[in-house]
Length: 283
Ligand SMILES: [Zn+2]
Image 1 (tube, rainbow, N blue to C red):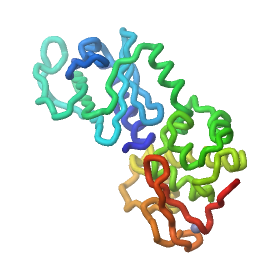
Image 2 (cartoon, rainbow, N blue to C red; image 1 turned 30 degrees about the vertical axis):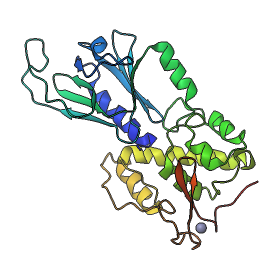
Image 3 (cartoon, helix red, strand yellow; image 1 turned 45 degrees about the vertical axis):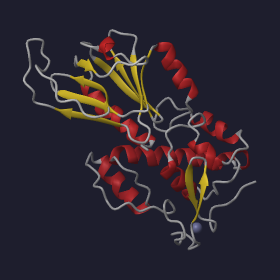
């Protein structure tokens, strides 16, 4: 499943279409009627956690998409011949699983196989934002609110980090690596972890996921992080180096910090990985 940085990356690609009128098509459902957007222009795109929102000018509707395990958003340039209305004369063939297509004079945006594909009005948008926790990659995320949400719960921190109503955008890889970097055992109840440690964890989530957004993949290894940041400040692309994790998918292998064997256990819907040697169980 795409973690939050990937969905923010998709929103950035969709923003290439801002201001361009488009032909909107796709199968109409009770929740999504592509005709309501036809001929209008994309006015913006944003992510909140793993949810993608596409805003359209001159209508109250926004497209709301969640990609789940198999969904995909693609934005490509095309060179199709244009008709008198400034839009392509013909549509490309329909791909399997297509939920929404937005065809402008220069770009083709396609959403395939999402688990959520619906139109939301302003009240629906407000309700969606309200039910999602703070997202480390959103400018409007309040760090104090995020820390307070983690600290007021007796549930395990490893569960809280994946609960999108508590904080949003963090997925299983970031959960494992963030808790290892913070030296916190995922079973520690949120309210037993010192506030200062939670603040540091949140700040680390912002930094790691910002690099992930810029690189287009999850970078957590210290040397790779330094190298990736270096490239990103120079506005250069980060190559896809071999992924090196401290604990994620490393069950039974030695912790790079203390050498203890990494443990793995189902925690929530996904497997948690942690080091029993250097990650402290609070509470
Ligand atoms: Zn360790």
